[in-house]
Length: 328
Image (cartoon, rainbow, N blue to C red; front, side, top):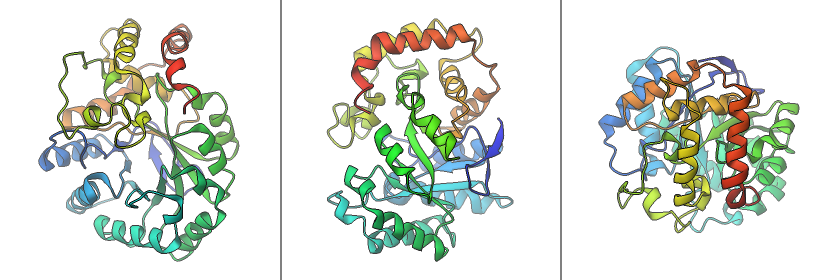
């Protein structure tokens, strides 16, 4: 894994980090022991960036991270969390300074720290991006020392472009993978120009790009790949990157032919993301220690050839773009 600066913040992070949604919940039955094993394996492999959120398992993910880091001791990785999705209803009016401070105070307790390294607004409603007072509140919380920096996790490219107009925004978390290529058309160039860190999430399209999912794969009732396949619980773009399941399976079979001998499709998909120099860190999740180690090893794959990259673009253009490109 490569190490580089996290945008304008005084952190150095590995280009592969640990996405902690799976160890919180909504991915079927993952025991706390398996979650701890996955995180420890990621840290043993050298990862120095962890991404979580206050709603992942209602704080379970944050608490596991705190316990593992306390037990390990030594130099801490950068830990990013998110705030906003605890609002019910999740509306722009709820993004007040009082509510944000309450959410952050809860994360401080869950993570057992005095200051959060990075807090990200968690896919807020579109109106929030046009309310400067929300970002003023984050500035005030940073001045107070409760957060070291702040960014935004976004659903849409347009929201990312609007967010980085605010000078205090140091990072954007956005879906970017073989099935969601639009961020590299304009947004990445703007982010590079402003030295904004990019966190690439949903890198394997909810497991589709692992190459292990088939039409017969069964998803548990508490797995979002079951209950949110059509956007019933949250934005459908979070599940299979918004690609219709059958279309995704067809595209996966074509991507499979591009995977180098000896490499897994998951590793190939992660290496594809790292081909963009705008990406600061990619955050695959892991159900267990073996998956975490495999994610770290993906960075060691050789750079993908130009013809391979062109082939992935052709698959995207022909099969996928019509379903996702103008939606997100």
